[in-house]
Length: 355
Image (cartoon, rainbow, N blue to C red; front, side, top):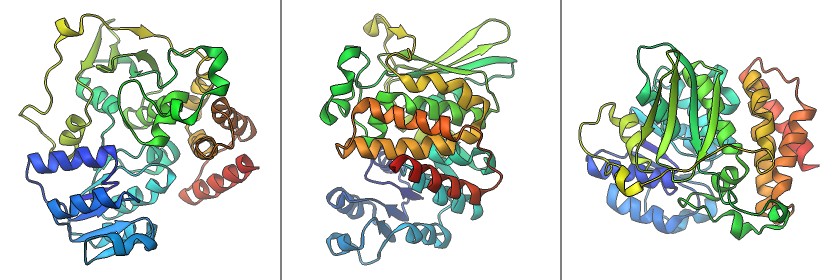
């Protein structure tokens, strides 16, 4: 297989599955964590390695190292592997998803932005999502009439923080997630709840449903609910590890233990909370977004600008959501008719938000 984003959380978990099931890794694509990449190269012996920057090539312990976005696309096209795990973060993950589809490869998709910005143009025939929430929804599907679907949120870094102090929180505080360690951008997206709006948009495309919602479940043990038309609800419960959805996405079927089962007696209690706009202002546009999924390209571009500005100490934490809300207000009538338009709108929104 080809692993895009091998040194990130999803990439590392994918390699754990590759190790467990003795799977061949043909291509590793990574950013700037060369030390970890070299450890992966030594163990998995890929034929091709692609990194972010040319200046790091001399640090990589491999004789076939390429760099940049075009090299990723070439590696996908020229590889003999049938499976692409796309764990890249951000808009830059879209072109590799499209290339993998064009090449007829199976896609295990962790790159949220592919469906968020271009869901209407993505052929899902060979696509499997590896978010725990979407995996949970898929796992729960039955041949029964569905009323609605719901996913859960951890609540992020500031779920218990005094509201009046949110405007002055530090970058370090924002990156301190209560349940797990993830990359910087997704941790900020979790704290603003933008990540959960993205996941609802993905679910809309994946399951062709618009009656979608989310609630906070603080222990991250329940990942998804399906509410059926008969009034019953099913829940997907599993310990928080991406290895389970990754294993199913890559292998198709899994008959051996990937995770330790949840001991509900040990858990003792669960805490559910409503997502309040007073803490998560972005949640106020959830229904508007779900009623016009074309707004995904606007929200994503604005959010990427906002998160980058916050991580560069240019704005405060609450300003991240303000940038997104302003952009949605400015571009609220956007209609996307082609892939080319997505890239044009993305540029236009970024320019507006940067200014």
